[in-house]
Amino acid sequence: MLFALVSTLVICFLINVPIGFALGMAALASLIASGTMPVSMIPQRMVAGANSFPLLAIPFFMLAGAIMERGGVSRRIVNMASALVGHISGGLAAVSIVACTFFAAISGSTPATAAAVGTLTIPEMEKRGYDRSYASAVVASASCLGVIIPPSITMVIFGIVANVSVGQLLIGGIIPGLFLSLILICVNYFRSKQLGYPTEEKRNWKQRWRTFTDAIWGLMMPIIILGGIMSGVFTPTESAAIAVVYGLLVSFFIYKELSLKDLVPIFYRASLNSAMIMLLIAAASPFGWVMTIEQVPQMASSAILGLSDNMHIIYLLMLIIYLILGTFMETAAIILLVVPIFAPIAESLGIDMVHFGVVTVIALAIGMATPPVGIALFATCGISNITIGQITKKVVPFLIALIAGLIVLAYVPILSTFLPKLLF
Amino acid sequence: MNRPKETAFLGCFNTSIKWFLAIIMMTMAGLSFYQVVMRYAFNNAPSWSEELVRFLFIWNSFVAAAIGIREHIHIGVDVFVNLLPKKFIPLMEVVVNLGIIVFSVYMVWHGWSVTLMTHRQPSPALGIPMSLVYLSIPVMGVMLIFYCSLETLSAWKRFTAERRGA
Image (cartoon, rainbow over all chains, first blue to last red; front, side, top):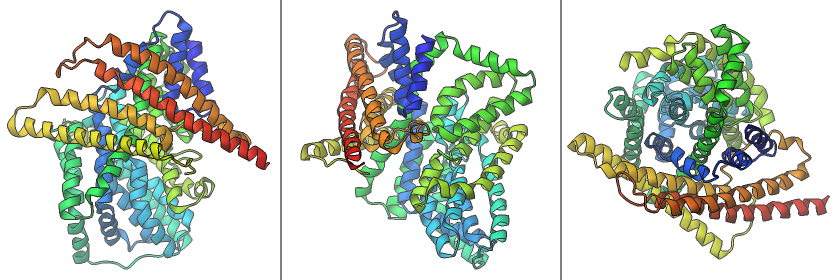
């Protein structure tokens, strides 16, 4: 049974079967190979895996971000960011990073953040003489903040798979997200000095205030989401539903940039994007069931724990595995395949699970920007019309900085656990 | 995207699926918002809405996963396939789509048997037969067979065209 499971999965990965179907096929093959287990397990388990209210946060966070983007909030955020940091060296690139940071607090997904900010700032940077690949690399690496700063689809998935409070994970992402944003700004500052990229005109505080009040309706959204979760008034799913309605109200009645005609494409797109993740989650349910009765998690964890009894080495090893898988695999798939094995290990090592979740999500977010395969790279290369090869060279310094930041965050748990401990 | 030309029927079918999914998603968002308002403003959360939203989401996810074949939303691990000579890539797509069709045949068959089995099992809150929920699996299976067949045909055409070209 185990042999059928693993060999089917490996063959599926080799020939590029979509991962959701690969998990389903592997479970199917192992049930057929067992001869005694009924195949009807698979449809039953798939429905059971999808049948969970917390999962609704995934499409709702996607929707809220998409509505806000279409409703004109991203342009206002870019304006505000350029009034704030445009005057430092590499101004427009710093603006992109700050705008990604703010937009990350509205959107729960990395490609959405990359699209919202990149479509506006990459052409502008090119006009001001930036290298197109450098401009894209900045947006690609900063868009990773999309899933680190709440709301975050990846944190929702981790919370459900590892059985950790989604609310605490979301709050735990705030400080690490801002920390990584600062690191990226610093890297850009020094690189731009080297490359001689221009600065923009400095604005006074009156102009800054005007851009801020223009963006205020968009910036209220994270306050509603986070305020609701922190005060315990809403669950993450409920706050996501409120964010959708709030986004519609702002886009229709205040910014007036959304029309009824836009709604069907937005809701259809959100259905498709969430279905891609939901198929993975549904198919991971029968797959995980076979793994559990074959005791794979126990075998894998005793193998990993047998390598060393030093907690820090095991921890580092897990992070390295995340980063390696992140270079070629989709984020949700890594969580569904690896976290059921890693979470018990982390627990037995006495690592705080909120901290472990935040660090996992950061490692996987970096994976979104590591070549050859990464959703942040695809999104930005699609906008700027360059190849993965062209962006790779320029993105490396940012990736190194992000990985250094990851290591700091992994070994200084207080940065991720301070806010959740304070508030819950 | 180099999609095959759609017949009038196929275009009409795809558009209705698009509207179906969009309307379900709007209903999900609306019901969840209604539920929050009822709970916190009137302290009177309806017991049926959460379950209904979950069931709608299951249908939305599985139907969207099937039409997602046409929209190319599903992501695999393509680093190994990209090592092959370029002309073999459409051939691999044919193999993958045939594999999904085989999986879907099992889903239609066993999903349907689960649907029949759960016909008398009421859902906890709404009291509707659970078969209405499990029906989403065979429906997804049928749609997957349909869309994967179209993908298989177009990939096969690309493969033979490229061979003739070379």
